Length: 143
Image 1: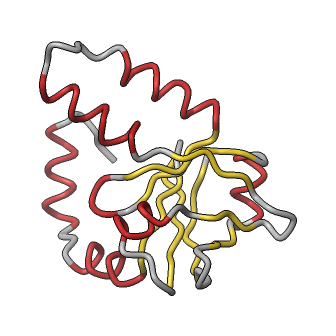
Image 2: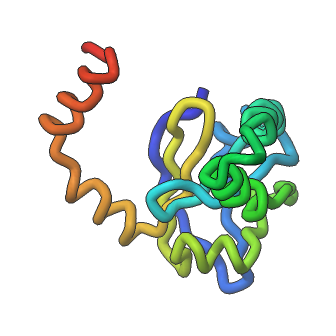
Image 3: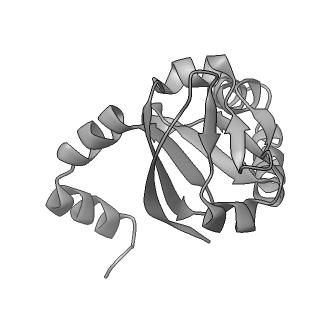
């Protein structure tokens, strides 16, 4: 399971160091794709395969299902960590997530999220935990 928050920088070539604790779980090769809220999602191959199966099992005749699957699958890229633990994030994904220099990597269970530092700060500044807690209770989650 992925957890914690790490602050790194991305270099001019689009390379980003993946923390060693994350690499231990991810392995040498894994998948980066567009994520929700303007970040990138990172999946270990096993978790990606399970997610991909869910996406490809959605009904083809449903327009929203096609759009949802297209969002994740068309934006996906297999990446491999080099000897320094860096990955090259494709330009289209860097542009999508607004990644330029300061980056935050966040472990959220079965995936990692890659955020530009500015977007990460904006998302957290807008968080009203009382409202979020109420919404989670309506989904059956209690603390």
